[in-house]
Image (cartoon, rainbow, N blue to C red):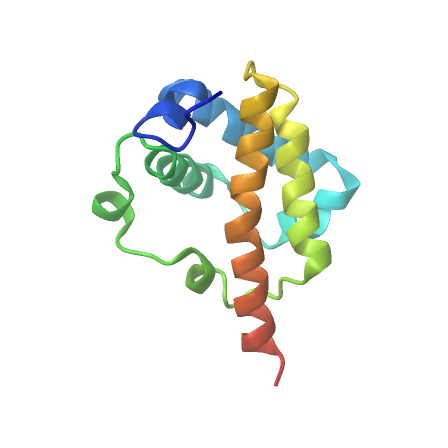
Length: 137
């Protein structure tokens, strides 16, 4: 039985900062190289350095590691930060697909990969719901 989601267990399972930054780099690589990721990659204009850092710092805190996002980038709500984007089921699924592909390159246990994609599905769906409300009029 794993204890992911308890204290810093998920942060440790993800390889701490180095592992999370590698996951994020591999995720954006998938977004750039996978056909399913091209549309969501186009939502991120230009250079990805800041966006990669934001996702890395967010994931570190979200997984139970250092919670430095607010002090570095300010307070945020994941769905509200993305509300200007049109995110439907296809975009949500493409994002999760690219993350799942990136997970294949991580030295994580299979149960942690499964746990992580299940956990990431929740905010991905919340983003889709907010986008639908924002853009349905």
